[in-house]
Image (cartoon, rainbow, N blue to C red; front, top):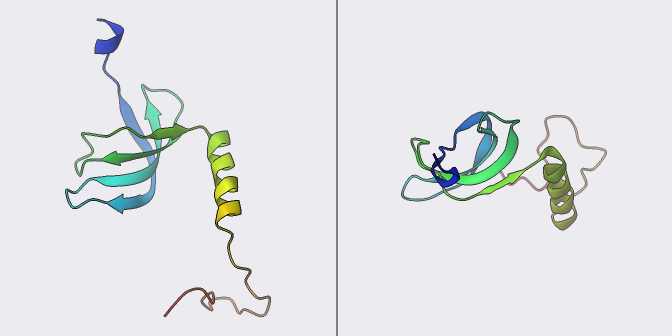
Amino acid sequence: MSESEQRITCHIVEHFGVLSKEPSGWTREFNLVSWNNREAKYDIRSWSADKKKMRRGITLTGVECDALRTLLNVRFPRPRIPASSEPGTPHPSVKS
């Protein structure tokens, strides 16, 4: 079997969440995925509703995912929570 004919296998080890959903039922998801029984990596890509088909995506190592988180935190900083906030009180940015 040639290299281009080899079957690619994947196993979603952990599902973190859906980033968006298309009217067709496809969802863009953030998952931890093992490709070809290798060490699992962080993965962002679109999946069909039955998870049998996928589109091109991006796979990140833990180090790359951490770097992305740092970049996102710089780009989208969280507002500071006042020290006087009581536990269980919604953050001021949360609208009722």
